[in-house]
Image (tube, rainbow, N blue to C red; front, top):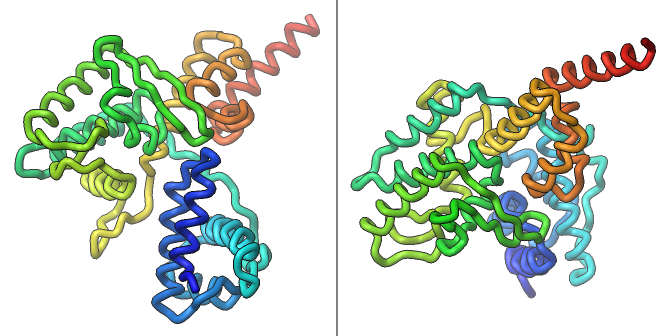
Length: 314
């Protein structure tokens, strides 16, 4: 009989074949199935979920509602293959999952993050160059972290300053132009990488052992840099702690772009559809969400709407 971890491999492979990324979902479900195996559970059930919730660590109901949704999706699929599976009720966690309000970095904070990443210790400097370049790239392009980590070397056209993102979250490819300064930083990193690591993966961003840089490493190093500059409090046992996330760099890029459009008097609705394509959103509503989520944008939108009403009445 297959273990829950083996079933999880099959589930993730199936969903990824349909174009889903699932990096974050895999991390959560791996911990869930590992906990199950270590504690004598061989099937998904309500007692398993409640036991995991009680022992996994502190988190608010919003987070647990999100985790419950992941477990339920896995359980619905598994029930087709193992009739012992019990799909935990959606009512086990009170409250619904809501999108987290984004943290919008000030330009000085982004500069501090990038500078501090360049100080990360390593024998020859590749670790510092890797994370400094990656964090800076996400900040100036709004890429998802896994889109940046998935770049192969042939996806980074340094002569034309164009990045090709393949098989992204929505299963689509897209191209992103970068400016001259960003291209310079990418060239600088690539030259150091090739000099220090002759035998390497085909990925653009690699570690000192030549293997691809990964999502867990990105979040670990981002948490360390954030603590170093005071954006997160010190933590015992190298825990990440709570505070602004690496994904908030993407949110910050989007919000600052929209703010600039408001201030320039552009047609926001037209520009938002362009931004939706640029960010790789499956639907424009995901881009328009920023206006509702960020008070300054909501205020600007309300003021513009009020002006239009007054102009129409005059």
